[in-house]
Amino acid sequence: MQRELLVAVLAGIGGMIGWGSADFFAKKTVDRVGSIVSLVWAHFFGTYILILIAISQLVFFHKAFHFPSSPPQWVGLIFFGVLQMIVYWLVYEGFGKGQLAVLNPVFASFTGVVALISILFLGESGGFAKFFPLGVIFLGIMLISLDTKALFSLRLKLDNIPGLKEVGIATVLASFWTLGWSKFIARQDWVSYALFMYLFMTIAAFVFSKLMKVKIGAVKSDLWKFLILIGFGEVIAYLAISLGYSATSLVSIVALISGAFSLPTILLARIFLKERVNLDQTIGTLVIIFGIIALSVLNK
Image (cartoon, rainbow, N blue to C red; front, side, top):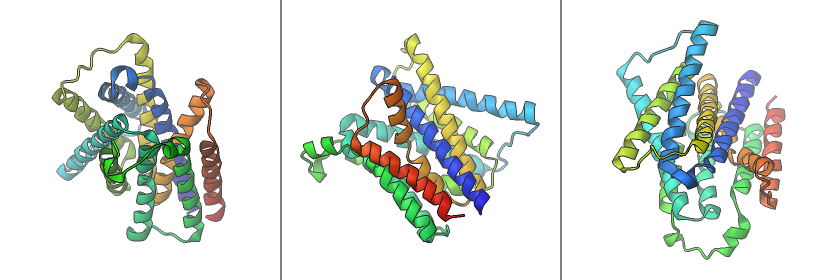
């Protein structure tokens, strides 16, 4: 159990760092070339990196690459790839229409939904030793996602919040994707499954760009490094969570810790862009760190 917990925590941290760094570098590209162009090229580079990792495994560690052997496995990989691309698009659309102060915590809440469903309905072991630290981590995620000053300055009507419909649907789909992917990849070759799922996500993004008639070729040379770094961050995230879901049954831990991806984004912005960290983010950061420590201590 202790080893399984360690793998789940490290997998969650890997997902958090990967997605957080990808979001940070996406700030450099989305405003200049748009979300769809960023999505297509970043995932193209991510797919290339994953292929190199698979080849390196074969060459240096003599670990054979696993190709799914049955039609249901291929259908599942295509399904999860396409579904995740839809989640990305809905989130980008929602954020483009509305206020982050309102929409960011809505989307971040999917991690709590995943943890709750996994523990209450899917047979994951619970108890105070898990519920308390997971609740603390979720509280931290909400705090770093909130911008209370901006939130209080808005006059909100729940029936007329720009972007809420898109982000709300994305939240439901992200919860479904996470729970489904954790079951689909359980005890499977996590590297090959992550690669194929990510490949189909990339293909879906490219097809979508064509359907939307978005020109993806107009990218200036100074942006390529950021697109590669986005892809690299995404690779870290998907490999990490796929390892966690494949090697452990602790879905709630992997989902919640990886869901704190705003934390590395905030820290990177503070270090490299000299952006100020507000009180909510500072408290949220400390709360998340405390929750991860409590999770490790209480579950010895």
